[in-house]
Image (tube, rainbow, N blue to C red):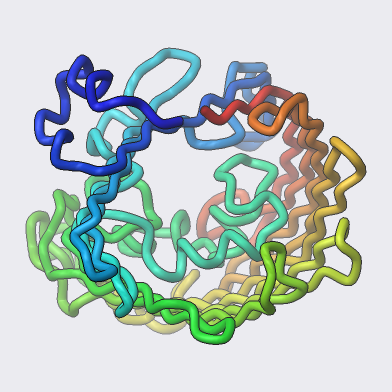
Length: 368
């Protein structure tokens, strides 16, 4: 939704917005009822007002510099719909992203904070399109627990505790133009520490491998390469991606989708991670494989979402998840949804025994 420069001035947050030739304000509001059983063994969560998607308020703009060159910026705030508070007490104000850059015939270069190349590319191959809800697969199985399994893993391994685990801060982001369906995306991060607490890793509690405030041991990077058939809704697409974070955890991924019918999208992801730099070989979770199969099927104003996946950590019980969802569009910007999920997972992060969780949620999603 486009707003005038006068409206931006009234917001009082962007005094330099007059220099932009195009500024957009956009956002998402998502809220619903949710319940999950066995959140800890034998204990179920009460029915709460939850969310299926990240709730956000964003500002993006471009300025035409001539000769095909544009300056651009993108700022995104995330918040909780049930309380109106900023998402996560330790997370930055612009948790979603804060990037500025240039775009031209060479592609797009941005600096700041945002999703890594792998994390930004992989959502197109997941049945819930990367939504971070319990029924979806992207947060856990599609990236093999890389975001959630242990301190030191995840893209933002040296961020504050509780920070979003799928972004780089202090980074450079580059996207090539699309050449005959091919595109390369690269993210490179600095060694800066962004407030991480001590990470024991191969050290001890008194002498941790990564002390609080210490810089990364290597420059983090993330690379994804995609090929998509031509068209607004490509008939098929393939992804190859890899990432190494600031504690040298490594992630490898291959994914694909195909549309055998215009209304049907079939997708698959295989993922492998290696955490051996900061977890001694033979200890739980030092290696992990995962895979997800899913589909979307559109029926008029409705859409069916279905997925099944497994995660197989080293020396730890497998995670197995099946989910089904349904969306019904009330307008191009608003839909209601229902999600059901059954998940078998380890009792603890290093356990060989399992518990079963059931998740139920229903709500409304609106984009503006």
